[in-house]
Structures are given as C-alpha cells and as structure tokens.
Length: 218
Ligand code: BG6
Ligand code: MG
Image 1 (cartoon, rainbow, N blue to C red):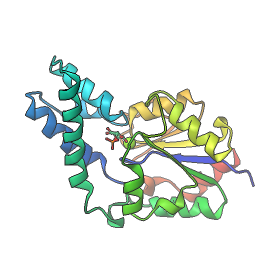
Image 2: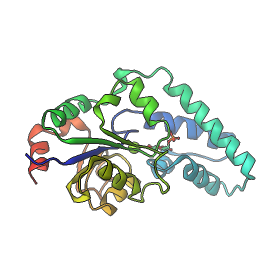
Image 3: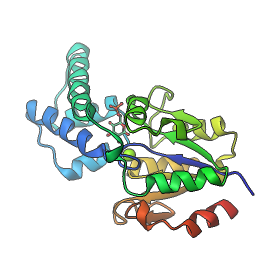
Image 4: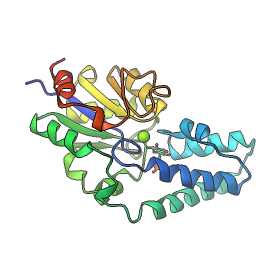
C-alpha cells in the first residue's frame, strides 16, 4: 500500500482552540478601541500571532512602537494560555481519534502543520502528541500561511512528496497554503468560506473510512 502524508492543522481542526484565539484577540482589540467581529476573525485564522496583531492595528489605523507591540503580543498569549490551561482530551474535535487511528493502522505518514507556537503544549494536554511523527509549528517556519512553507516542511519531515500529501485545514489561509504546496486540500468547516479547498466537510464525522482509503489509493 502507498504511504501518503496526512498533514493536520491544529487550531480548529484537531481541537476547538479557534474559539479561544477568538476570545483573546477580541479582548485585546476591544482594549485598544478596535471593533472585532467574527468576519474579521475569519481573516486571522491560520495567521501567525505577529501578522494577526498587525492586521488588528491596521483595522484600527493604529501604529505602535516595537515595545508596545510586543507587550500586546505577550498580553494576547497570556490570555490565550489561561483559556487553554485546563484543556484535556475532552476538547478533541469529534472523530479526530477515529481518523488518526485509521491512518495509523494503514501505516500512513501523520504530521502536524500549524502556525501556533503553542502547538506542542496543546498536543500534550490532549494526549495526542505521540500520534504525530512530525510536528511543524510556528517555531519551525519563517513564512506563515498562506505561504506553503509549513506544509512543505511537514512533507519533507515525513519523506513524502508534496503531491502525495493531504492537508486538513479550517482556515482560508491554510487552504491557500496547501494548494500552493500542490497538495490535496480538505477544508473542515463552512463550505462557503473554504470554497478554494478540493473537498470540504463540516467536521470529521462526515469523513468516511472509504474516503480515506480512496485518498491513499489515488
Ligand atoms: C493558528 C491560529 O493555528 O495559530 C491563529 O489559527 C493563531 O488564530 C496562530 O494566531 C498562532 O498561534 P499562537 O498560539 O502561536 O499565538
Ligand atoms: Mg486552524
């Protein structure tokens, strides 16, 4: 059987931490007088911490000195870390373990491709870290999504050609990154938002074992 590379985004794909990022950014934006809607949040999904703050400041036409900028970055992360402090396996999204186990029994490559610098901490908290043979996170890239670097690094770490990789993503920026990497992109979430993906499912409960087998055989 062919060994493909299955690359998972973390926030909003494996765990529902997208809601904690939203709460932390909303609090920060409001604290500096910038309105923050769900539509704006969509544009921050998959985007690095630095780029996210740059966007928020841009929306509020605010310019800051480096020291103030860094202080806000730390504040956001402290707030976020408080939200994730008590996370455990109960916050793994539905059927993620089923898909990981299926891939494992089929000897497929499994990697993480996340923009987050907190990725390893979260995978440890939810007890999934041992499932990933490669972890590329926000500490392992110089260019964030939609640049394909994170997924290309993951493919390299798995020793699988990019064209033989499949990416699961909940963010527009991540789908664009997967497409730019010449990989199969699978959107997890709203099809009207993730329309650039090759396939879209509401969540992993909609992904059948047969579909995974087809991807392996492709
Ligand atoms: C992505 C999230 O996975 O990681 C973004 O979708 C987040 O919302 C980014 O900003 C960076 O995360 P962190 O944990 O390094 O601030
Ligand atoms: Mg995500």
